[in-house]
Amino acid sequence: MKGFSTLLLSLSFSAIHVTTPSIKAFLALVPASILLVGSVVLFLREKTFACFLQLIGAACLIVVVLAHVFEAFRLFPSMHWGETHSVGHYLDFWSAVLGLSVFPTGYLLHSLTKSGAEREPVYGFGLGPNKSKAKSAAMNMAHGFAIVVAVARALKCPTEECSKMIGPLVANEETTELVTVKLQNNLDLSVVQRSFDIVIVCQ
Image (cartoon, rainbow, N blue to C red; front, side, top):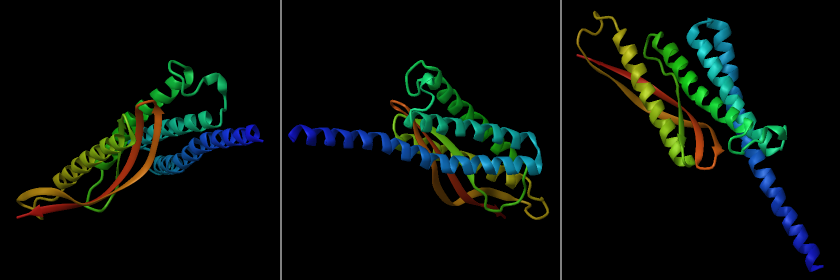
């Protein structure tokens, strides 16, 4: 009877080990899918190079999340998900690198072509040895993008309306964590969205 109880306890722990990453992977799939759908809609509506870059970057992030879904459910085991120097590992890693590079570039190019000071979110991506440091890096990137967008919008202000500009300000920033996944040991990926107001001060 004692051995049977030990076996049940072992099976329970095994079930928890399998279920927890599965839930995390599916939770990460939701915001990543929203990001991809939004990128598709934007590209079909505007058909610009910047929107195309956003679409490619969002697709790469979906690949990253799907890699962790496949790993959690042990799908396509020949890819050896999560194992160092495997095909699955390189697909996961380079998709993350490409997504982190291409999506922000496309989003920034798209933001710089707009005018006005309306509230609009920017996105940030970060890598770190743990979740908190990855999120911190993502927030710093998003804040940097917000400043660049604010400066670009300020430069487009008509001189007759603002003859002497003191400087644009980024105010009322709000951060939303979209995706945080563990790519490998000591390497986490975080994606955040940061909404902000652009305040243009004129004298």
